[in-house]
Amino acid sequence: MEPHEADHQAGLEPATVQRLRALGGDGFVERLVGLLLENAPQHVAAVTEAARRGDPDSARRAAHTLRSTAGTVGATALLAAAEHVETLAVSAVEPKALAAAAAALEAEWDSLRRALTPRP
Image 1 (cartoon, rainbow, N blue to C red):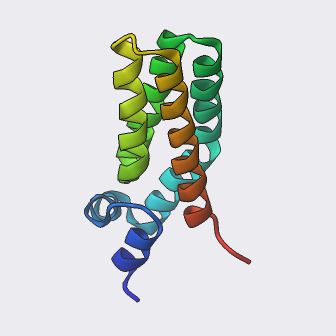
Image 2: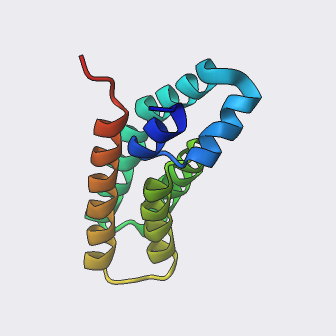
Image 3: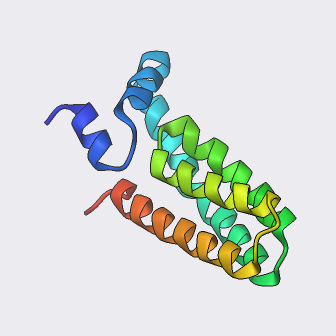
């Protein structure tokens, strides 16, 4: 299986991964994915907690940071979920809608995390 096929299966957009490889090689891609795996959990938790508290501004800020990180590595589904939270947070939606978007973001992160985590 070619590397770009594995990236797609892992939830990363192949063209983005190829551009990153061209910039810094496989090690660069691995470091960026490692940073996502290290930092995303706190941003996802911040979105979830902010939605639970009914704090759309904090949810927006955390989602924005996560969106940027996801976009950098080509995690397009996670990016879209974070963007959705961010959009809802600025549009003053019902708290239940923001909480549902936060739950969807958390589920998307769980799926991506499982796909990116090396198996023994």
